Structure formats: structure tokens, C-alpha cells
Length: 167
Image (tube, rainbow, N blue to C red; front, side, top):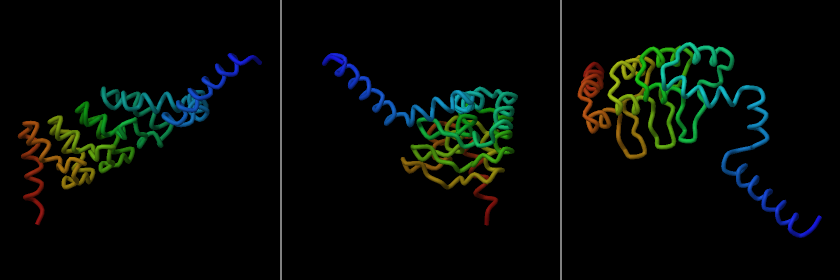
């Protein structure tokens, strides 16, 4: 092997090591992709975001562990459903035991996301699933404060009504 081949090989190894460090194990990812798991894991967020209940349900029936899979921002499928605003999608995820208090990297729960999006129906589903309305994200804001800041008064009212019902 000549010097330039060695340099090229070393450069390629460095790139592979950097990719492994930044994205996890390439070997593991390749194995998961071959088994169809990684494809589901990357797609489950899209199914939840766009309200594709049929594909979401099939994926979760095949692999229930996908319920808490996280993307690069720490978002779960329930966070994605809250972004999309589909009540039915949120209900399906809750039925599959999604954690309504799971936190993304920024500390946001699905309730924070739904409140900021102004999705009253998803907020109601999450509250019925025991989402904690008093949790603060890393910016120190509760879901109600995010809803108010985003101009979603209907969500603010739902969250205020909840506070009035408790002793």
C-alpha cells in the first residue's frame, strides 16, 4: 500500500468514526435498517405528525417500543402528534401508552407543544391522559404560558378551567 492510499484510508476511517460519534453506531443502524426497525422509527414521527392513524397503528402493533422513540431533538411520536394537531392520532398514541409527560431536549412535553400550536382537542386528550400542566420547559414556561404567549386563548381557558376544578 502506498502513502497516498494510506492517507486516503485514514481519512475515510476518521470520517466513519465521526459519523459513528455523531449519529450512534453505524453498524447498529445498518442492522436495524435491514430489520425494518430504523425505517419505522424514522417514519413513526411522520405518521404521527400527519395523522396517518392506520400506518401509525400498524407500526406500533409490529413494534410497541416505537411509542417512545425519539428524534434528534428528543421528540416522541406524541410530540409530533401534538404538532400536527390530530386528536385521533393523540388518542391512538395514548392508547398505546405514550408518556404524556415525556420531555424533549428543550424540556417541552407534548402538552407544551399542543398548547403552543393552539390545539384544544389535543390538549384535552393529553390532560385526560394525566399530562402535568405545571411542568416547565427549559425556558421556564408552562403550557398555559406558552399558549398565552402564542395567542391561543381557547387553550388558556381549558388550562385555567382545569386549575379551577382542583381544590
